[in-house]
Length: 268
Image (cartoon, rainbow, N blue to C red; front, side):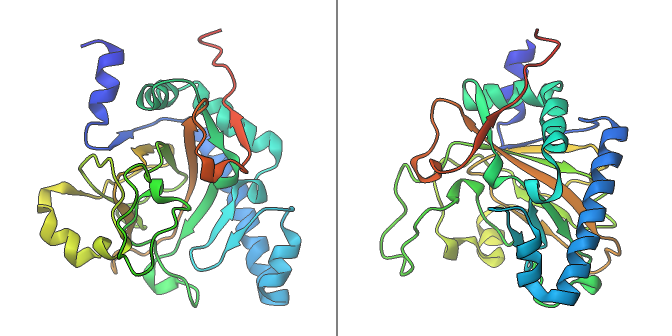
């Protein structure tokens, strides 16, 4: 099997894990920056509340306190987030994403996040893990009554790249996936844990243990959630990047800022 044939096969269940995707030194550097910024946010929030955090962040950047997520440009300077994209461009992840999307792609910088998930006993007040969802539902206007089914073309064609900056999935919260490739939207009410456990076999639920520098990539239809268990004692930090085909930017994301990955030196 050729390299090009092998990569789509890795995504046949909607998700693929790439171990040691990025160098440990870079991961440690990005983790240190993230730790510093989270410490600053915590200090500002204690002194000035959420409005103080919003004033401190650069314009158009966001902090979501209920899931402890910060826009990537609110954590990293431009030179740093460009370094993240440059490093990713030098890995097999670039090829995997391009083949999955069927052509050259761009990163949605306005939908890129640094995320922190706390051990259950350490969660701040009001904090909650992400429940089951599909990233391809981003900004979709679901009918709140669910009398109208989601549009056939409502699912965004996209790839999420989730980079672990810390160990997770064992001692710290990680991710859990349903191993099935989906090409359409599920309504929010269909995504309760009880319903999914009856719909899918136990073997289809996958919660990988990740080391710093591991990456998980998955399609817009892939069902996933935060995996947090009572026995987990540590917190985890991750970077989440979302990619779209460059010549097919979804209309509902047209106002976002998209950036290309730097050209790989290996391909130059």
